[in-house]
Image (cartoon, rainbow, N blue to C red; front, side, top):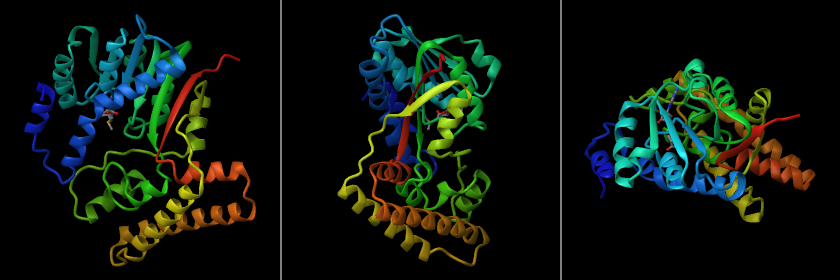
Length: 305
Ligand SMILES: C[S@@+](CC[C@H](N)C(=O)[O-])C[C@H]1O[C@@H](n2cnc3c(N)ncnc32)[C@H](O)[C@@H]1O
């Protein structure tokens, strides 16, 4: 075990989700390497001597992998614990001197502009945590030139899996609520941590946010749409209905959340009816993209026309 993992295992975490969170943190180097390899192999080519920016870099998995590919890598992060442990992660990986760790707020447009342009800009599971997702997409666009590519990952809050269990706080129905209601619901269920998600958007809204900022983006997460995927979707929907039936009606915020869940169930069922009436390929793609893909991986480039 390296210094990084040993230091993390010393932390007690303090809430019921720490175990899950630790697993996520410890998977960071592998996730980072997967992202960088995918971008190198399919979208940007070799990174030797090129500039990579990871916004909201957490514990540094992306930067470490990019540095191992020979890039100049910079990670931006506001969390002091993340940065402290990132340093240990760099040391364990022998790339301490070739990665620039920068403390800073990605929401600060002037600060971000001062960092210059990059060949590859990565923003992995951060967009939903900042106060203003639109501003962050603007910032990503500003850090790119015509040859750059960006890679932006966000959870799909409308997927049946996310509705059943929101990926950050692992609660039923939370992803459907705005940040204030979600916090209230989280507390009403007896938890005291902060709900760290700001806003979620759907697929078309994200594409529009990219387009407004001059980025053409595509989702590269494969969309399974066979009979097995349909059986899984129906099973998840049945689980959601079961959870909905068990929601408490003596607490105002639970009643409000139940309305959102009802609306969501109705929306999914209407789409299923449409699909049955007119089972075209594009309807299938849209159904499974909207309700089964757990996250979107957007790859984008600056529009030049
Ligand atoms: C879910 S974590 C993802 C970390 C990393 N990208 C990964 O996928 O492992 C979100 C990260 O974004 C960082 N973050 C949130 N708001 C930020 C901001 N305004 N500026 C810079 N970093 C931010 C958090 O501190 C946290 O490390």
